Image (tube, rainbow, N blue to C red; front, side):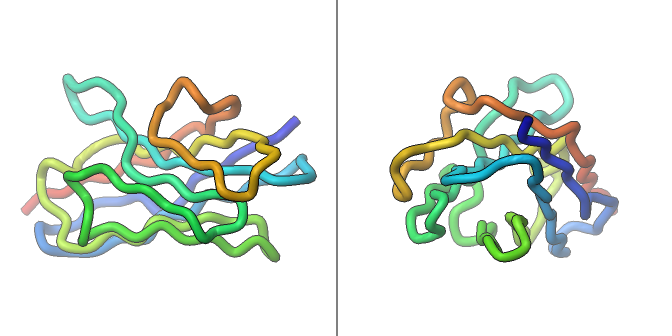
Length: 126
């Protein structure tokens, strides 16, 4: 059973940065990872996604140019570097995984993912 554990959340001032980590265990083969978030009173939305090979990525328009997703397959971790944070980025952040045949597949659609972590809270406040 694939398991995901997020870390790196916290409280940061506007304009600040955080790096989230998603540690994966209990699987073999190709796994695509997506980061999702759910803010107060909002629906969960896709933020960034990365293919198992790491060369294909996608981002929500709201985070393009500010967030970067990357992965370290040797250590089974995926990261979300978040810069220029603002109040609208306040949310619970989740990583999700899907086993794939293709090393290129990735998606921001949450229904495409099979496994989910418990989430890590990010709060942007002055």
